[in-house]
Image: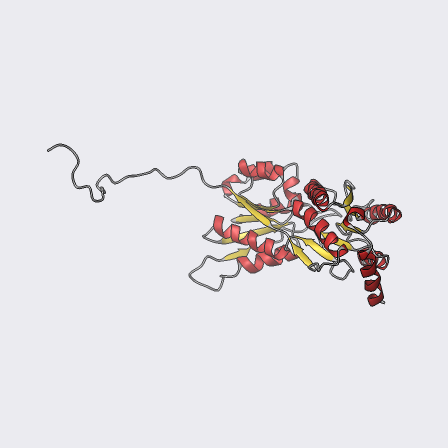
Length: 327
């Protein structure tokens, strides 16, 4: 059956030129995803492809009243795009209900519509490719930045854990713990991650972690830094000299960096989510090979100290010049 579908897709591609290709983007709901739209539009214009996009607003999958919001939005948009004859779809997948994205991609593939996922992947689906950050590498880069900022080692707290990022961080930061000539890092002991109720109490986690006086607090998501009391929390704990390192490089986060409310950031590049998703759909429609996983770049931000040590010049070191003055 799969062979027959692939054969039909191959025949279909030969009859579709770039001028008649139509792709659709179903984006995520936070400000983080705005650059995805820009990258998508730019690459579509370069390829001469007609492209559409939708920005659903708050696309939370697990809110009490909106756990099906992600699925319902995608079903409505895709039904409309099917009638318009779209040739491919790029989307941030839904993680709820279980198996929804797998069933959706299977149905779209059977209809000759390839799907590219970005930002998060569902490997068990029938998607053509995943475009996004190598999450394990991001975690490792967070760890390397921490070693750079705090070379003497110590204890850390992890807020907003995301599985692959967290695993990459722990694997990298503990790499030299069995060596006596390198600094050692360990997670703080104590229950600081418990939450009460349905929501995630990031501020409560941060406050409990700070009481344990770690050398560093690592944020694996933007959300904790978006809390309305984040800057007050950092200010209240300045005397503890905690190093704060966050994920992503949104405008407000870069402002926090300049004001020293965070000491370092590892940013993703959502613009590339858009450009690479459009390119993957185009290449697939043209019968070109497409990588299963297309990783995008990351960038590290941290402040270079401006208070440099006083410059001392030894006036006796004159090189080959032996005498200065009059004889």
